[in-house]
Length: 607
Ligand code: G6P
Image 1 (cartoon, rainbow, N blue to C red):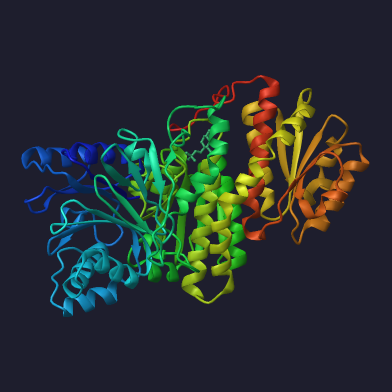
Image 2: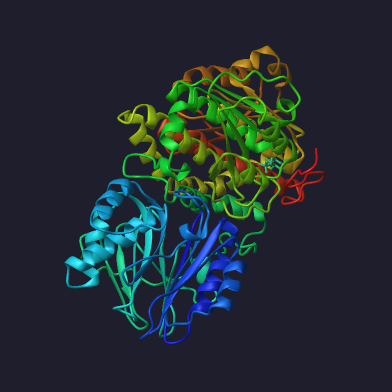
């Protein structure tokens, strides 16, 4: 994902820009660049492909010092990774950097070409540079020109702009991609992520959707989308999100569970339009290529495999495409039948899991239409070797038991399902519904995280237990599987998940007062059937622990935790959270090493 840094001060800001880019490196990028200016000098632009270290070398060869500047790390979407496509892009005395996707770049490019603008890159960003320049030639001031250009853009953006005519002002705007303004003493900064600026400040103003701003070293003017002056309070950056510190948390796993609202917002950042998904993040030909897909195979290991199992329910019910899901260690060693126009999706937090990587390599000769990696590590082998990549932005996950990586994978898979549907039926109501539901997720998860005290109390019931059953139906069956996996990984209690309808076919024989039965029971079309299954457990003296929707909790009694009523489509993501908290608190009761359970590794890079 791209990164933006900007600064305006009364000292040379190039080192601030470079350090900011270094701090954004973990997000993944393929080229980097800066544009710097000082009063009386023109824009000095330096760009390089590869790492920020390459940019530093280029800057050593042609130094660019100044009081005002913008910088960028680029992750190619429109146009291959190459110096001429790297940001900043320039036009008639201005330079801009951009995160996001400009959906209407093609008609704008045609219009600007007709007006005589010459393009030197294949990017959608250069369109914005020329568009601002054109408006500036028509209007008396840069602010009006910037606003007029923003008014023509469709899609998602975070933008930063500098112009030789205003060597003391840094302009920026956001719509669908994050941007923060950093407060220094007698200087201002901006960045796509506050982490980039923690070297110089811990005080930030968070821009709202549709905001634009003008920063000088001693002044910060922010306007909302109606051009009204807006107050965005300065907030101190306190939490240790994405950092490698545990901060206030006792374990990384707990910290990572609580980071999920932010991890999901980050994963969605720049991927959603008003009522549709921005398919262009998969590349300029995404629409056509998505439309060609007639079958899907998903391959992964462990928790990532469970994410794939949920996606199968979504893909088959919403898009109507056949979808098969398999663990990579089996898939790679069997004869696979690949129907025409099949997409292979590999899912992995690390992107280095040996079996998943081998599966991707094996798939190369199997006649797939294309391969897609859904992954949390931008520079990983899986991402490098797949045709397409869809990054999750969970941030570093340290706890061996995967939590935020799983929910962000689900978010990416629901986004992808919606993209598949959208290219087939743009007006399908489910497209806009899914977008709205995804937007609501971070706040809903925050609500569910507040259930922690009740879940902590329930965990005591597992103190002397050696086995547990997890039940679910439909897309909540893989969620029950993930719940059982979490419990066994970190508390060493033997746990198995069953599709609740299978209970009578065997596991019911195990049920007695020593067998807690955890069920995932949202209010969906299968609830009545699930309730019958739970009665079967109750009748045999089994101890029920039920995660249910608040609208039905009255009927469930003690041992029930109520969750908010939500759209069915995002319910599997929401019901994951209490199961994570339950296994975490059971592990505390058991006194195990939560973050490093015995015999397990975070990244299994050998077969
Ligand atoms: C290991 C980890 C699990 C993870 C699995 C797959 O078993 O302990 O948490 O789900 O590998 O890892 P990946 O990085 O490919 O998602």
